Length: 122
Image: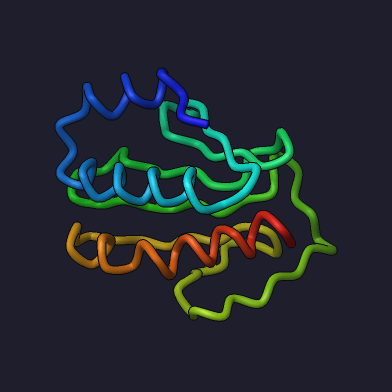
């Protein structure tokens, strides 16, 4: 479900990656069952089952960082096999995928949609 707060946040941004992030956002909300969104940490954040699972960090110019997480508390028992090799692990339940090129992010939307679908089901 699209959140008007995310619409407002992205519409007010002059970040170069916003058009590609909008396309990713649409794909995720259309193709990942049970996914919703809100603004958290001044960023578009996607929820599944009421829990935050993915944040798109646009705080640095020219860079979109997808932060895969499992909530505020670290879950040391969590495991996830990244079939894409895109995820840079920052802990047992946190990973980053970074794009500095909007064309590359656009091209990756189908792969990222599948990755997010697997992540929220894990």
